[in-house]
Structure formats: structure tokens, C-alpha cells
Length: 33
Image (cartoon, rainbow, N blue to C red; front, side, top):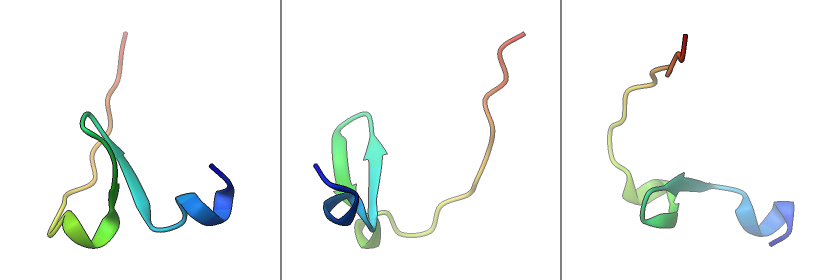
């Protein structure tokens, strides 16, 4: 996929989904020590 095709999409465990389908989300980080 090109960058233009990926614009507005989010990578999830289910694959790429449109960002508007996500609803309210909270940002967070994963740290591996």
C-alpha cells in the first residue's frame, strides 16, 4: 500500500481499519525492559 492509501488508517490486531471506526481511544506506550 502507498502512503496515501494508508492515510487515516490504524493498524490493529485485526488488520487495518479506518480511523473513524475506532471511536474514542486513549494513547499509551508499551515499554519492554
